[in-house]
Length: 141
Image (cartoon, one colour):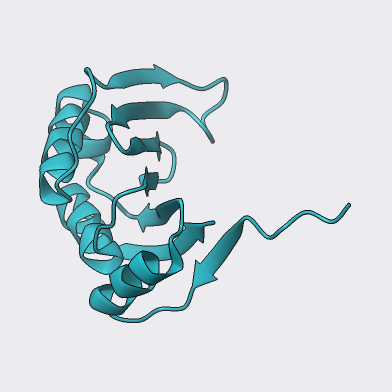
């Protein structure tokens, strides 16, 4: 038996068009993957700043946090060492990892409620002072 395609990448377009496509498609969820490079090292190495980011991000995209976030520092080697975080939201999950060695951040925002992908990615970039940002948007069907 062939499996149905479970996700659909969204080409870059306006936030309004993405959210309209999301509503029309009756998709299960919207995922934005944000990659940040050359972040402010003081922010990505500070669990209080990461906690502040989570709260502000959830407010920005109008998502209700479910409980407190988990923020843990780990990594067996310099390449991967850094904080990882996870915040349940009532419509799904925000997660991410911050790589100390490269001052990079890799964030995933998944929700069954719509939100603006590009504005969200720009919010993340501005909060962490990243010199470079890239993002992808995927609808989970």
